Image (tube, rainbow, N blue to C red; front, side, top):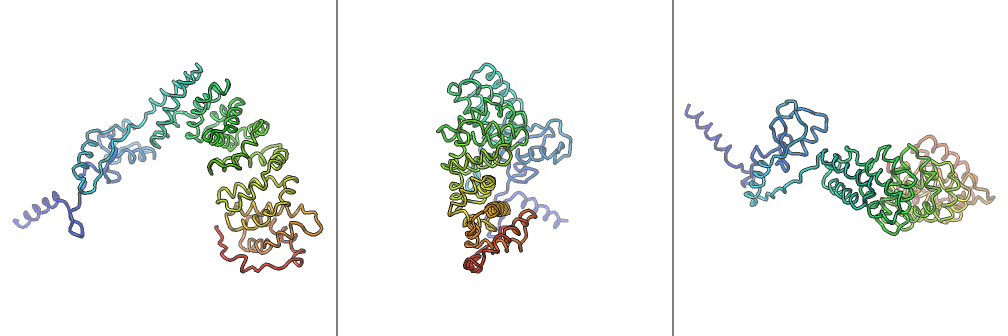
Length: 444
């Protein structure tokens, strides 16, 4: 009896004392009330549910967003899904952190209170009123406030987006763009920078942003000297053309607007950042593949020098940029003028053959497609581009691709290319396949 009493007493003492690690050093034990019941980690933003249980905000919000409407600990149905900040527990945790600084514990910062749906709705109503009154200064300040809240946390951004910020900002952009750009440039710039953060947009928002006045404003921004304006404008245009709804109409507007194609090409010639360059390539790709007047746009791009520009870019481009540049060239080479320009450029064959099996499936398919278009339309008796392709090892590369496997369309084109190249093989020196493919690694 005495023995069992001593054991219980020793157990209680052990529970009150701090544990020791393997090296015999004292380990700090986090009080149970300071731990989140879900993660068992120290809470940094404690909030209490209607069940009376306190959790760390990120963990309980994930639980609720997953479609759970009960308290994880008690399994009781929650009367409200809005967690309430527990300032008392948070203050106790901060005090405990300060007391244990010697153990390497840092004081948790006081968290910002996340924005509520009611607050967002109120701000959006004010933006709508300011827009109707054409009060640019007031609207700019409100949009800046929304943008600041969205940048504070991902939770704030989700709340703002779910309350329809995209529609409100797009409508405001369209309304202010109807007046002179010079008068409303500051508010338009602020709205556009906020819109970019809120992507993707729904159909209604894209309808406002795709209006004639809004499109003219976007092209005006795209042609301006300000880098942030140009970046935001091209991202907005990419968002518009990437949608299947009214895509043809938007592409038609874009191709007919003065200076639009030149401004897009300028982002490739003098890049601001990789994101804006990729966006510009995406827009151009849609213009030459998904639009009724592809040849006219393609010829205009060729005259502006897009072929040598993209071939030089492909020499050392990263995967995403490489795929988009090859996609644009594939569309450009549907035009006779584009193919003629490619045949005159010394980089064409070496770059295209090098990209086969070295970047990605998509890059390989585009490269084969381009080679097929160039070789199929070769009219010179001496072989022209066919000889060039053989000289840089295209035959061996294509044979290897056929052995490794590819999609049916690419496979058919590879077979056609091999048939076209085969008669000219005797006219050139064979390339040593071992040296040519040294270090080749298939990325898929």
